[in-house]
Length: 76
Ligand code: HEM
Image (cartoon, rainbow, N blue to C red; front, side, top):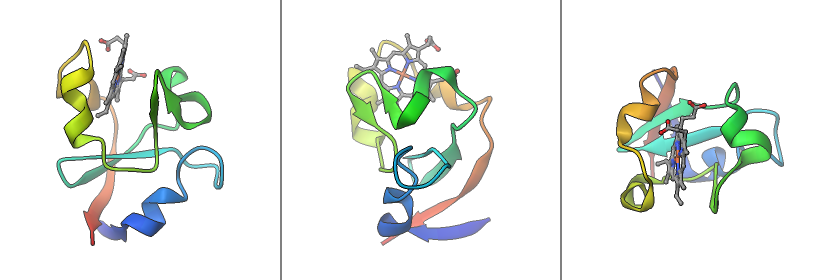
């Protein structure tokens, strides 16, 4: 798996580049195929960042990531 910096991840916010990526517990997932992440927005959350600490606000568990391919991991 490839390593990406926060800056590289930030470009995958659904606005600056076509890819829509979200980091969770150090792993980056490609959620581009999801209707629920259209244009990089998921309820009040934006893609292109680490949303580990925000999962507690969600009505679901981390199981939602299971169907998405992990495309890399996040480094500083
Ligand atoms: C206000 C907070 C949030 C709300 C209301 C919300 C709501 C939802 C709902 C209703 C679904 C579809 C049903 C389900 O799978 O349970 C979903 C799916 C999902 N959520 Fe959230 N969510 C929130 C926060 C988050 C956060 C912080 C993350 C990332 C850490 C996240 C990641 C996902 C993912 C990856 C999916 C699967 C999308 C798909 O299957 O296409 N959500 N969310």
